[in-house]
Length: 262
Image (cartoon, rainbow, N blue to C red; front, side, top):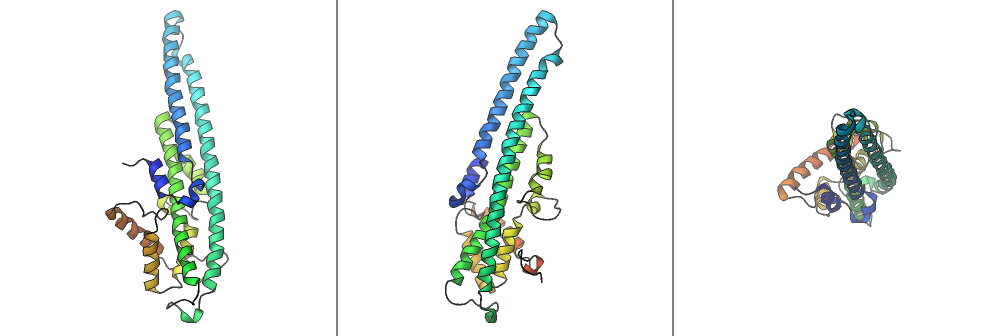
């Protein structure tokens, strides 16, 4: 199985590389917590054995420094996790807002008389293609960063015996700009990059079926950032079906911010 750190690097958009969660940094800090816990435990057990043999000291008293040290290290690691969440969520919010504005401008320039048949001549087609691809990449951006943060906290719970993951997801991830509006039972629905997904829906609502399929195929073959670039053919096909099903919801289900709802 490919390590998540490698997956994150391979699936990220090169131009956005520094915008993603610094997973390697968080992993190093987690390793420091784990190693410190192991070292402290060994030292504490050694001191405990010596103390008990000399003065019959209570075991519970010898464990207190260890607990306090681990709690401090966990608190420091979670501080870094929250800092990364704020950073990537702020970037996504700004990127999604800019994308929504550009999509509104691009779709407003379409030939309204052409309906779903075609586009005005000029650079509109190329512009929509870029916006469509960026929408797909922003959707994937949300999924990758949420999973990176969740995995780090999950690993910490497993190695340190903490119980932070549930609270982190419910009180922080789901309250961040990365989360989709509403209450959702699954991670996939709660963090489906809805703002970026609506941008893609708005673009596709203006195009013919043939052109939509062309843009979707283009997005799948454009490399990192769309969730399809490094998968085996079988996994690509399964993931492609899931993505196409997710984005085939009629655009009237959610208008872009600033647009009237149907």
